[in-house]
Length: 184
Ligand SMILES: [Zn+2]
Image (tube, rainbow, N blue to C red; front, top):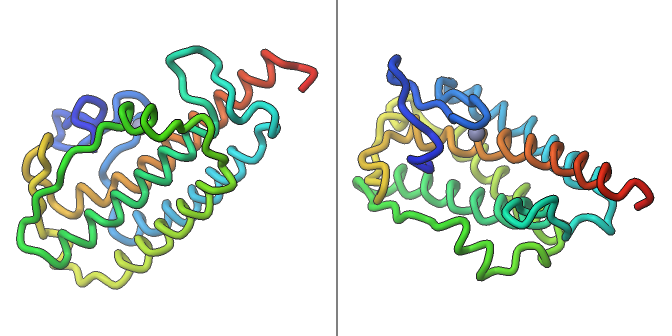
């Protein structure tokens, strides 16, 4: 949940101002969208030729490798947060500076072959967690350092959102990179 990217609309539903993803799914839909989009992430990532995976289309845009490394961190973070809300009383959820992490972790150089299995393992753990939840558990809350009090129902949408949002990024930059280097 990035409070600068995902805003609560007039209807009370969080919506991503970049990709339009709406935080309005049922628990079963959250699990289903995760299971389908994690496959799309892998396909979009591996569609980028190996020689272009560490490359950026512009200095401020992440490379395909970096998007995958970010998703590996983000999917593990979201899975861990959901698990804490289920098992702890109003846990404090610390913020995560994704740009700082990308620089510190040298994400352009992290092979997507390492990141994709991490994403898939975290999403599989997340899906089995949410599928096992009784209905009442969706109302449990965590205290997000930046976004404030969040229900599990809201926070759990971060997983299908991250996957959907970045599958789109990977498709877009993959096409741009290939257009920039037509012989690769
Ligand atoms: Zn989005």
